[in-house]
Length: 322
Image 1 (cartoon, rainbow, N blue to C red):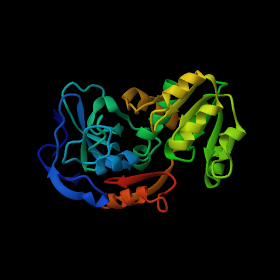
Image 2: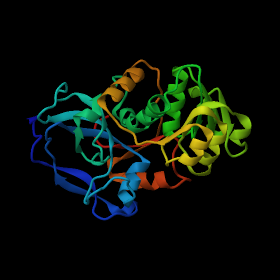
Image 3: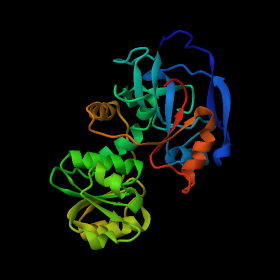
Image 4: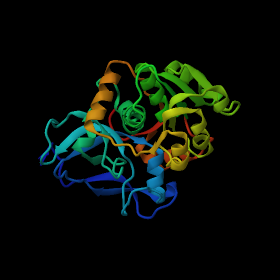
């Protein structure tokens, strides 16, 4: 292992979950600083993003096995403090961003292990806070549009939940790729969604989207439930319904001659690097809703799970640095 000064065998602070539960299941503790193994990098975490998946893991509702105790958190931005065997292309002190590991845990800590294949050099234009807000939500949007739906310039996409964090990136990516972007959002988010690139915004509280549009090439479902079920009606034959929420009805998809899929995000260095280039070129906007100190991770989870307090934009924990 290659390490910076004082990188080995010291303690650090980390939020820990010993029993699944609500936000109060997390406790801030002193634990041993980890050492990177093969293919891993030790990151001194400057900022960590807070996402719904963090709450699912904390509550024991993750789709993946999550042995206890665990440290929540996946999105991070920081500097390389140690390099494990078999890692190439990263140096000590480099600013990086990305995700910890395929289990999406470990980032709510002063130091975190990250798989080298799931991080990349941080966009130079961004602060650590901004960079920590990007990885999961931006790559989810990219995969949905271009890898799952396989959309091309000139096609029409309907994005449900466009006012959210994933939706905002999906709108921007769609506009940049020459898609006709139609979105559902609340009236409060309509102006922002249009600014990001939507040609038309449908107020889901006052309008039924199936009365406003039809024959679309793809629907990106970031909402699920009834919204997903109603989306089949607006797709052209051969279109695609892509959900990040739940598995669509395959029987109905077959009857209508469309493809329908649910997928889990796959964060990779290659995808992160592509998005970093767009951010450095000024072609994407980040959106932070709240920055909380590291000591208030529990409050970040309370905010995220309370519809009345949830901010517009990503919640970020400030751990160290700028």
